[in-house]
Length: 121
Ligand SMILES: CC(C)(COP(=O)(O)OP(=O)(O)OC[C@H]1O[C@@H](n2cnc3c(N)ncnc32)[C@H](O)[C@@H]1OP(=O)(O)O)[C@@H](O)C(=O)NCCC(=O)NCCS
View (cartoon, helix red, strand yellow):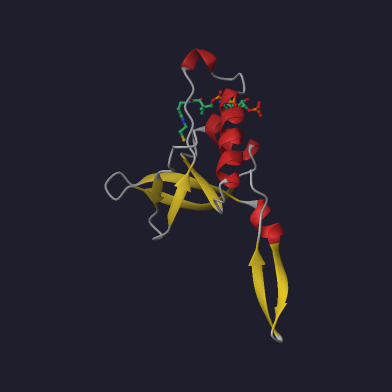
């Protein structure tokens, strides 16, 4: 897992985000596996210092919307994904809470700079 690199997702708004995705084999769906795995990967990525994660979900895909919501994601934007297909998608997103909490002002020669620190995993 440590060697895996995130796959960037280019959004229509010009931002490049890191996306979490999930897919569970049909006869094991509804057992909580997607939520458990997505939550574990979110922790792993935030532990590596990732600031923000997204999940692209079609609005009619209620099980996938629930997975995103259960791991703490919220709809940040609605987009038409893919220039040719123009599929409506929710952009679910979540920010790394450890990074926000770690920002603390540090005095320096009469002015202020900000130090960003977080615990190593
Ligand atoms: C989406 C997917 C990964 C979910 O996997 P899973 O292991 O069933 O997910 P979980 O068991 O962790 O959670 C599913 C949630 O969806 C809910 N759910 C299932 N069917 C639902 C429906 N028709 N309407 C509303 N909610 C539904 C479940 O009740 C559960 O929520 P709850 O815990 O609040 O009750 C799985 O359905 C899948 O692989 N689908 C095909 C691939 C896919 O669509 N991937 C996502 C692309 S964005």
